[in-house]
Image (cartoon, rainbow, N blue to C red; front, top):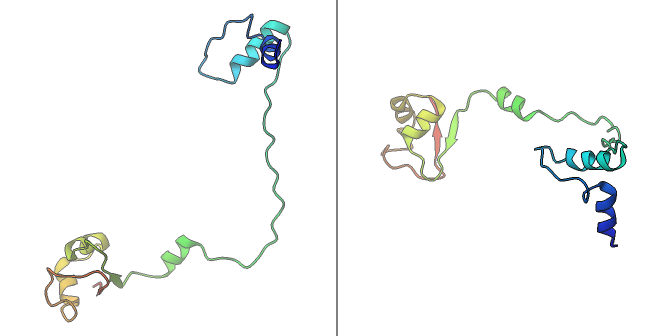
Length: 120
């Protein structure tokens, strides 16, 4: 008898019919209980215990730094951006966006990646 055959016999797989219950952890335990009459507990991983970390300098919270930075005043144009899309994204009026950037964007239909736009 091989190792796996002995293991199957000890767990009761040869005698008990295996019926999936939707909870895979119960089937081997039920089969073992049926063959030996004893409750077999599945190995449960122990929770990991981490060593305490010494307090260091406080790092700024990413969400807090964005909130404390104030409103966005400039935007760098990326590929496939449009003035109307930028206005919609930042919740500003398209006409106001065009007017504020009239000196750097002579044609509102042509903006290029890398351009810096001011927001009204």
